[in-house]
Amino acid sequence: MVPVDETFFRLKTLFMGDDNCLEGNDPASEVHGGSAFMRPCLEESGQLWKMVDIGGDQFQLQSAFQGDDMCLESNDPASEVHDGNPFMRPCLNESGQHWSTSLVE
Image (cartoon, rainbow, N blue to C red; front, side, top):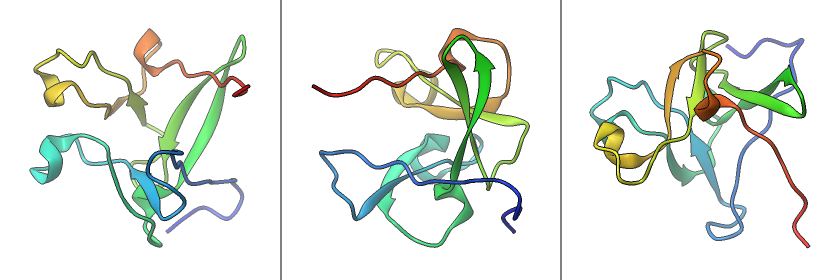
C-alpha cells in the first residue's frame, strides 16, 4: 500500500517512451538478477519512486515497494554485481546512491 502523505512519481526515459517505467526489484530476486529494470508502466509499487533530499542538490531514490530503508544504487557497467545494472540496496551515505538532476538543453 502506498502511503497517502508522500508524493510518488514514475521514472521514464526518452529512449523507452511514456509507456515504460523503471521498476525497483528485490535484490535477491531471480527476475533480471535482482536489478532494477524497465517494463510497461503498471499500477505497481515497484514503479513508484520518491526523492529523499540528502542536501547539496543531491537526493536518494526510494520505491514504494522497497520502502524507506532501500535506495536505488547506480553501478559500474563492467561490474559483475547485478551485471552492472542499477539495483536496490540498503540506504547508505554512498556516492552510488547520491542522485542529481540536470536540464536537457
